[in-house]
Image 1 (cartoon, protein in one colour):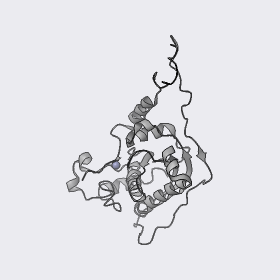
Image 2: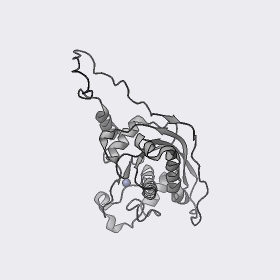
Image 3: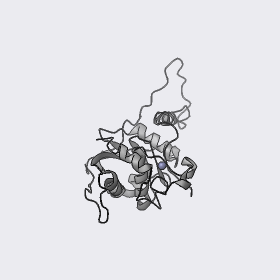
Image 4: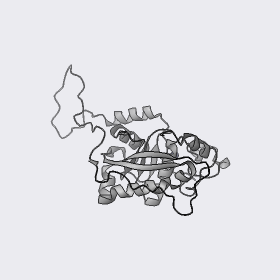
Length: 253
Ligand SMILES: [Zn+2]
């Protein structure tokens, strides 16, 4: 079964950011409402006047997420799982904030808290939201989740948090993450798929690779798990994915 849109970029992180920066560069036709621009002969290229540094509207009304330190009933920590607290900066685009209104922060937090339950049990990875910020996504990128990841990464820095998780109301569904990186995006669909996708994408940040057949090519020999089919098997990581995440679980310690 082909799984749409829970992918890692094929390009390196640096390359993706570069492409996103190119896409975001203003062009001569960008201000079509204005009269024909006066040629600026011999001058340097114009610098964008509103480069959207870092983010848009920082919101400190909920300074931290409500962390669920205890595991839900029925989930037992694996013996030997460590303790790795991973701080999160949530970045929500304008469509996410508009669609969810005053709930936008709590919905994002609930998705991440659901996503990290099994990660905490298996690997000791406990994600904790420390900050929420708004930013404006590039609407021309449509539902290209990896291009939207590059767009967000260019606009939203870590601000000393371990990872940045983008929540986008733009596009249809899915997500994208940098392999062994610290930025990922999740597109709006419904809250079940969203936490399943979040679990898959956060696993990428700990170096686990995609296992779909069109990416890995070997999935007939691989038991379905979070990295192969997060919708039907969201609660387990099998070899080699389990070992890879276990080896990277302390990367932000
Ligand atoms: Zn993936």
